[in-house]
Image 1 (cartoon, rainbow, N blue to C red):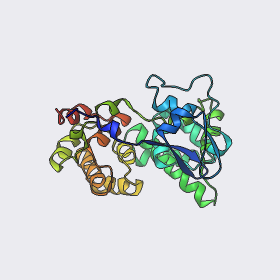
Image 2 (cartoon, rainbow, N blue to C red):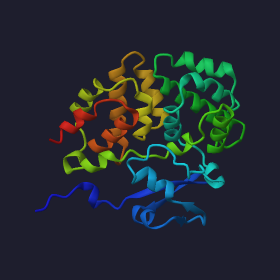
Image 3 (cartoon, rainbow, N blue to C red):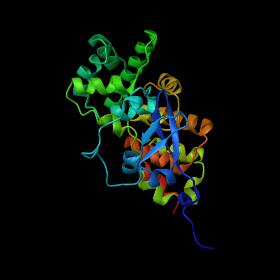
Image 4 (cartoon, rainbow, N blue to C red):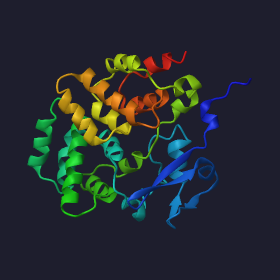
Length: 267
């Protein structure tokens, strides 16, 4: 029997921002079409999606990129979008950026103090959450345009918004059957000792809700490995994609460590 990569057995779909949600298109359509009309009657450009997913050498927007269009900028950023954006903004630049989102300096200082033991990306991600709550409390929708305008106001590259839709694809080539297994509790316990200070980013990237991640923070305020193991167990208990390979992709995305350990399990 000829060995088959798991990645060859899937019909892959990719998401594009559309209003307050995401529309999906098959990988076959992305490769064939320059533009695509979604079920909402909106026209989407697929050129940038091809660069982010199929061109593994494309790490930044090319000169042809005009950024997201007006319709796409109306999208409400998800927790995952915000975590990914926080990984691109230096914490020294973040304060001015945060203020240009309509927030006050003391709200940033309070967030810094409350989450002082966490990584810079984690602190910025929690600040983003405060911003979303603030907008919603004013009966306003937080949008990608808000983020893009604030980036421009502080002379940061607005194409950072494009980057939040970029997916890491190099691990697709090793998606064998062994890596489609669910990791055991023993594996997750051992893995928790190999992962760095990225608990919030990892949890959100794995699809754990921000509420559940914060709950883990409360349970394990001074135990990093315990905190990470608790988040991993929540992912395992609730995710529909609780595979070793999914975990590897999330760890690579947040630069959390442990990828080689998981890869060795498939050998």
